[in-house]
Image 1 (cartoon, rainbow, N blue to C red):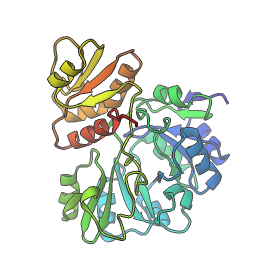
Image 2: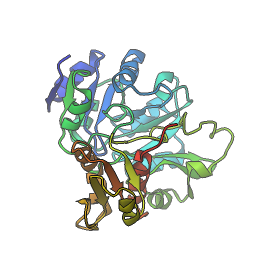
Image 3: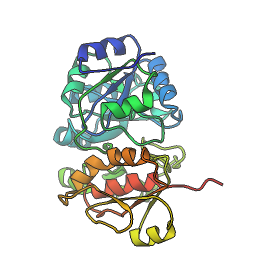
Image 4: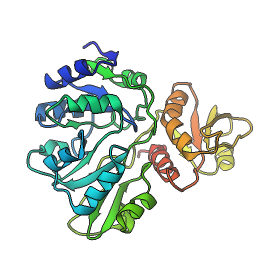
Amino acid sequence: MKTQIGEDVHIAAAFLKAGELVAIPTETVYGLAGNDLSEESVAKIYAAKNRPSFNPLILHVANIAQINDYAFVDEISLKLAEHFMPGPLTLLLPKKTKVPDITTAGSKKVAIRIPNQRLTLDLLAQLDFPLAAPSANPSGYISPTNAHHVMEGLHGKIPYILDGGNTTVGLESTICEVANNIIILHRAGSVTAAALSAISGLDVIETAAYHAPDISDHSTDSPATPGQLKSHYAPHTPLFMGNIEELIHAHIGKKIAVISFNNRYEGVDNFILAPDHLLSTAASKLFATLRSIDQSNYDVILSEVFPNEGIGIAINDRIGRAQFILKH
């Protein structure tokens, strides 16, 4: 199969209507999209990515009215949607029967969002079905933040990549769920826990701290939402996160790349993500920088722990999941 890159929404729509897959730009990362109402199309997504079938997908829709078409929306979730969408927030909601079980990996809940990207919103407006779309990369590898990243991983597997340029946020969406008068944060992102609490008036807790029996029957090996696998977003080059001076000492004699917020270290190649000292800048550059390093024959990648506030929490989450795990 020949893979083309272009900016034509009509071509993208035609492929999707024909049951094919198309890579789409969003403000977070590029997604691998297919007709969610077609189990055959959704199965193609799992196959193209080599994604485990127990790892659910996110549903992308054009507007809030369409969220109600595919999920049951409570008052607080609606309030969050009205404030943050279109944007980098995904809501986990009880699904309606028209959403296939293959999309949710058998769960009775569906993750759903409205992307804030002009081309993709135009595309969704041309379709009479929502798009299931995980990140447009081989499963477990670094998420793509431009069309050429998608081409590197999925060339020959999909017919079309809709090119919307570089993503602006650069990290996957925040995923949250309203339950029992609290907000459960399933995945950190640029919409922070503080922002969710400010709009909803509810406390926000992380998934790991929530133990309601009707919710937490998923381990990290069988996640309730996307982005929860223990090993994810990972380069092929071993990556370690922690105190850089100690890590450099532990890897003496190796060709080392160091990812930092705005610090520079001696005797290594430095990749400073935020010379402007902004965490949002670091987030937008993280995945592209990891890809560049991974293609440059380093023996090891070392990363600082970033300031654990705002979107820095999401940066640390992604780097933490990308760390080298010794398999016995």
